[in-house]
Length: 348
Image 1 (tube, rainbow, N blue to C red):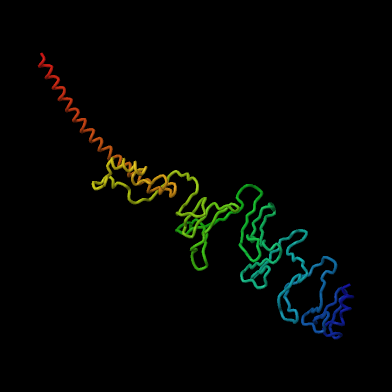
Image 2 (cartoon, rainbow, N blue to C red; image 1 turned 60 degrees about the vertical axis):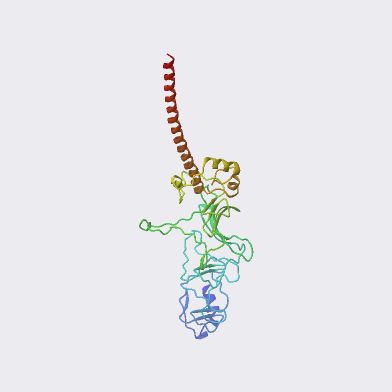
């Protein structure tokens, strides 16, 4: 069959009837360029037209190098595989499932002809919102994917999804790992950087933790962190209960000033008058004020201690008065006893 095919093509190869051919009985060879569909071959084999290697059988084409060619000339150009036919290109598949690697020395463009990065992807194939998915063969229902979070035309928000159904452990994990010798210094191991291209965020929140659409934790641009609230007004704002073993509050102005001689301690009459007029102690916020504004934990502890120290002074003053009264009462009792003794003796 080979012999018949090559003899049929003898009229169109380079040098025509002047070509030098050698027939060994099992093969026909030549040292000249061979042209099929052209009389001016510029390579050992030049074919002007389509080439079907393998025919209708599953035969192999073995080559060392493949170069792309320009459409309208002999110049080198891009290499097209399965051009305009919608078929797949497979590497390493077969009955024995051999593993073949694909090596690139330049950039890889997927859906783009001029990649600007080592891997540059533009999705033009439906569904256009899905980009990448990674799975393992022994757990095909679990995966990591990168998709467009908006689902809307003209918009793209990258979304990383760790999807897990094989058990109830976490679905995605981010780890920052270093060596023992680098476990030093003040640099954080993991850094989440919310910013504009030229500096820090000034107005909008830095990040938010949500469950579906419910905001659970929000950090504002000023560093305020809200748990259960999206508008924290302090470094830490919690809309709910807090359970802690200990809370430490830094405070300046602890009320030891109450015990100084120049402290203007209100009299009990003044305290009574204020309570009757205002309905609460001096320097202590009213129930309405607390309901509207809350309390500052450190400041309130300071005010409460101030009242305790004032009460301590009142008690000391009362004790001093009681001691004086007891001395006076004892003295009067002694006088009364002497008077009674004298009267009794005079009656005798």
